[in-house]
View (cartoon, rainbow, N blue to C red):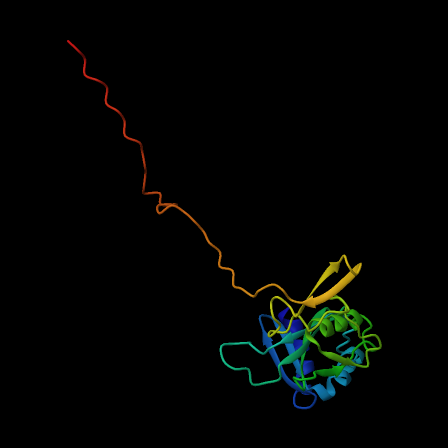
Length: 214
């Protein structure tokens, strides 16, 4: 496996400096960080080059880096991560692209490169609000059409923004402001003081036998 990984790394290293920001190897996996302006063009090259031949996209997801690490994150807030597979060469590649404009993140769609990107991009749009330019059917996928916000963003409130219920007076489902008060639930575990201490044994006193009478 290491020889195959070294071969793939050698093929990708000449790309660094142009459309590719960096190439890293961690835990036996290669990650290619791509410039957003060349994102779609490079992905097409990864698919079409015979020596790379990543004919299959196996996953695409969005990430919110706003609270990543112990210190303030100094790069773009959102990123798209794509996992590619070459069945022909039997190797895999992770591609990451940071999306410009934290307020309105937009990146090129890969639906016409790999049709499998369709639902993955809709999921990233629904959960993180990343817009994929060129996607011809970018609708919510997992949340309701009336849902407000994007629940995988780190600043999304745990209780949400609205709640849905059936109104018997109106005879339909309605949306209203959240009525659940935000609170932090701390688990409570009640145990005896000596619970689990194998060195403590509690035994009831044994009554002594009465003395014999004369």
